[in-house]
Length: 337
Ligand code: 5MM
Image 1 (cartoon, rainbow, N blue to C red):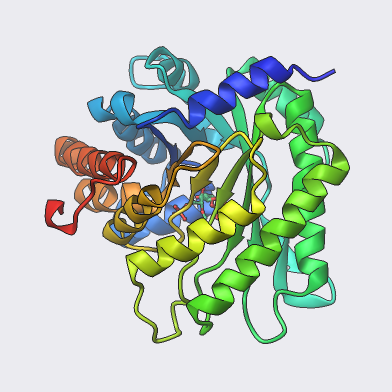
Image 2 (tube, rainbow, N blue to C red):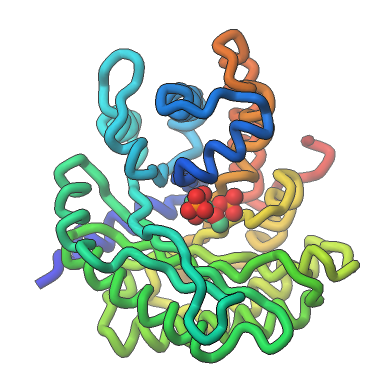
């Protein structure tokens, strides 16, 4: 028997009005690449210090309902010795954990991806519960291109997401399922909309057939945006119109919440698009952000791995949190940048 009440109340807290989720779950490879781009050292302690500056920014308490951590990070502590998971919980922020183990080529269609990590997941989940995690995240990748996505890619990823979600719920952890339709590609926004629609239909069909408890589940989705190489301009009202239309038609009303990834949008685009999406509500589920790059990029650049820049980095992070918060009430304007 799963603890439906606990799952539902965690999901509700994660999408509480005016708050959102910080994705700080970059694997070491991704994190190091981003650190290299600003000249920061790629050591374990440097990753720890960077995460600490984000978590201790005073506005985090105001605007964050949850933080998604990486395996290394959930085992780390702040400089005062307090484990990050405990420190976040103390600030009223639910610690979460990314539990997928990344992507590999899909057999028979190697340009597409499947996500690994189901082996041993039950045991890993039990360990994360003991460390204080309240929710989990699993990312799948859907690529748009010639003859892509294939039905096999969408179905295989949807089924894997459902099996992961069941295991997380069994452990008492809210699963965030993240079928990311990738921004890269020459496709226009109309194709992005049809692929997102089909992907989410397949994903929720798998959730239903595996018996995932929807009020204790959160969807982390891409917004419907034109491919990076399409030559189309991203227009926030169009992005919001299409994103709201897809979500309202596909996501069951009982779902525990919908959160957005930023997927390579600039911080300002991610705030403006979210604000326009908010204006197209009401939605039957809570809607909020779960950004990594769109919240972190200016802070990371300001920090650049130097202790003396912590305060400037926190100021930059606080600004992104505040603007993302404004987007949640539909009051963001580009003039606030
Ligand atoms: C798509 O990436 C997720 C959201 O981040 P953005 O808002 O920047 O798009 C993010 O949570 C991602 O899953 C983690 O950073 C982990 O990434 P890797 O590639 O290191 O597993």
